[in-house]
Structure formats: C-alpha cells, structure tokens
Image 1 (cartoon, rainbow, N blue to C red):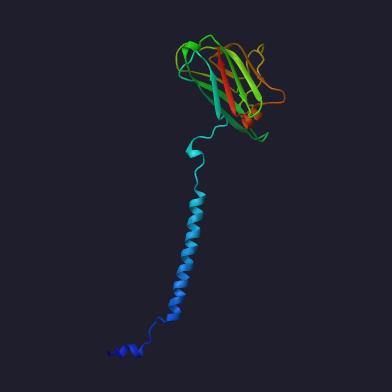
Image 2 (image 1 turned 120 degrees about the vertical axis):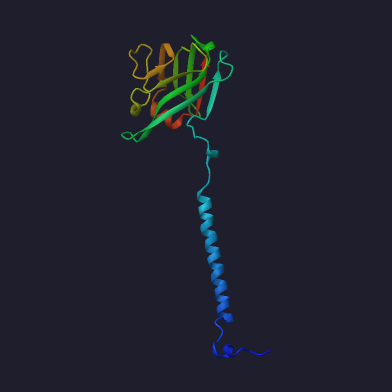
Length: 188
C-alpha cells in the first residue's frame, strides 16, 4: 500500500498521547456535567404534593344537623412589630340550615393542649352557609371577646346570640397561628 506524498510532508495532527488526554478531559467534563444536573434536579423537589400547607391539619366535627360535613379554614398575617404571625380568621364553610339556632362550640388545639374556645349560636337560614370570625385589626389578630362585650372588636358572620371567644391562660392570636394543629367543631 502506497502512502500519499502529503502524509510524509505534514505530520498527523493526532498522536496517541493527545488522543488519550482528550478522552480523559471529555470524561471529566461529563462527570462535572452530571454533578451540576443532579444539583438542579435535587433543588426542585416538591413538598406536600403541591397541596396547600395549612396550619390546622385536622378537623373533627360533631354536628348531627349537618350530614355532608363542615370545612374549617384559618388565615393569619405577619405582624412586623411583634415579628410573628397572628391568627386573623376562622371560617366554617358549608354549614346546613338544619344547624340554624343551635349552639356552636369551636375549640382550637395545639398537639397537646386547648388554645382557644369560641361559642355562640349558628345563624344559618339556608344550606351551604359560611360562618366566620375575622379580626377587626388583622395585625393584632383575633382578640378575646367576653360575652358581655359590645360592640365586638372582631367581625362575626352568622354566629350570634351570646358570642364569646376565650383564649386559654397566656395564649394569644400569635400562639394560635404558631401552634394550632386541630379544630373541634360541636353543634347541638
């Protein structure tokens, strides 16, 4: 087999030593690329299956007057002055007319102790009503309400009669926002 006249005049650009070095650097870049890609995928994990994170994770309802269930929800706002979240609202959705004029007792618990109790009378003249207590001044959270206090510092919707909101000793709206884990609703 004859060689081309150009092969002897111009040496081949690639030697075996340079070829091995190229493979080594390519492999090194590949490993570094995998490491970078792994960190990107690890940073995009999903918490709580993309469901909303609620500060009250359990609701127990005792209400024979409402057979399809009542949904409880809470809201809170951050108070810049105190540096903590303040509990600003509790809402009970889908309350049926069968509960109208019945006594309601709502308790919010931490994992181990009762934090607050709300009492009053349900004023739900039709099915699917939403009862709520909302803070008059959100930055202060919901304040204690004695049954004799008038007017109420907070807004009460469809809960009337002798209404009362009593925190347990040394507990306030900040504690409920931070530690509220369970709500018990009793209507009878």
